[in-house]
Image (tube, rainbow, N blue to C red; front, side, top):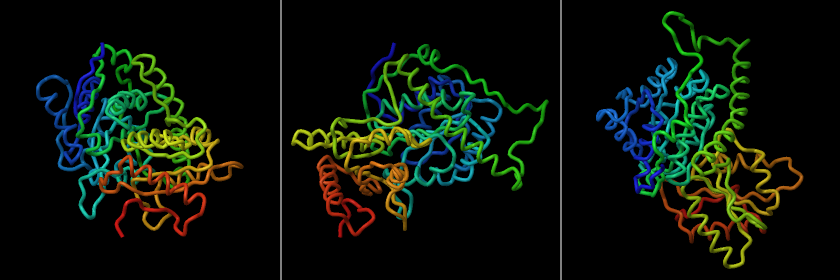
Length: 391
């Protein structure tokens, strides 16, 4: 029977890893992810989790150790943030290309320089093309639930891909929220033991990830792309079965008060919940405004996005990362790409805000909505606008 407890979201991630009966955790501490692996290390040390905890000298080593653990069929977990994710960067491609079902929680944080320990989405956007399934959480319950789902998705034999669960640094990681924690028996019914079909065996040595000359490399990448796209159906199935067991449902995106909305705001992560409050206020004032909370980042939910915006005239996209020298934010770029070529599509207006952990309040979201509507009507001499930047 699930119990609702007040708990720091980071610590709930550690409990999710425990309930998943992970075999190996290899990690290096970095703010604001540290509490996750600290708690897991304590669970292992106290005998509450029978797993191998591998302390390493860097995040590059952490992900490298995860590769080896996953390759022999161990259920493998890690966590990181910001510069740590960047130090892992080259190894992330190996995990996805080799079809290792590793699960990683990423406490999203701004990239240097200047040094910032506060949250934005610059780290995740830097690794968007590494071949990992990537899911955003808006609150503590979504974070906990989707860590459990991540193991189920990654380890499905139709998938066998690594999964990142993104939770906003400090805005989620260090916040205490009421979260339903199921008991171990419930989780065991949903998440079977890992049965990895291709474990390394010293009695049957093989070569893995060897040299790929031009006559094979493109085919390998095409197969990887097809596999990632096809994983979407498994993700949807997992979420449906999770709802059957635990009563909480998830979708690639969530529409909030979108019925009859001529103007839609799109956001990701914890800031989307503040945006919900702003939408409520605008609705009370008579505005025809709704919100899209984008949850599934990879594979990208093209069909769901197109259906969600089909009746809107304006789509305002908030990015929390900046594509330097480009058209603004990465999410807005992808949304425009997804809608390009449609006979009927909304006017897309892009904003970049909340960089380096700067808050965006309910009043700020109302201002973003107002300014976005102005740009849609009158145009702008800029490709995008940075919100809240002092002149």
